[in-house]
Image (cartoon, rainbow, N blue to C red; front, side, top):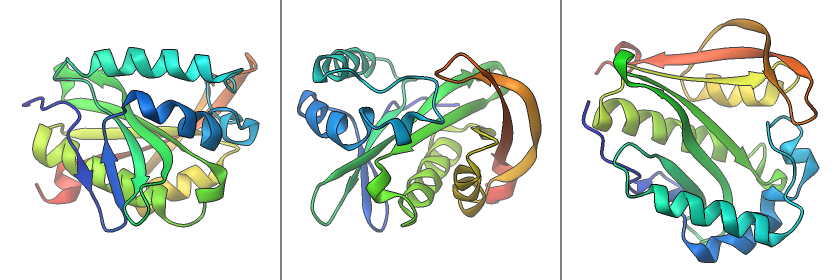
Length: 185
């Protein structure tokens, strides 16, 4: 593997890039405060924009590391920030990683999640050299599973009480993955 850090990824409609401090307010307003968005995540809605600013400051510092991958997702046509996608876990001894994402609800069901995920998968496998990229979603969040399937990931099964949600409850999760072989790399 050859870690490259968070480089820009461009798809047909999207630009995935590093966060900058100025992204705090759009992130806060678009998805970080929305309980519909965070319902299926491990973190609660941000109480104020200072929480978002502190998180972004932490992420921006982490960009110094070549094995840190965290993108803000932006529409190319109007530069509007719509969501986030990142590597949330790495298992470099096994050349695999886990990806997570979230988007403002006004941008759901438009194919943006699938487009961003497919772009990140291509980058992580073809450019960085991961053999496997996987992701999971809370079983109740079937829409996320559709995003994964449309991005080429294969359903692997249900993991019982695999994760704690942001209310502290154990939830079942559905796991998907894609391998280097699946991309013909």
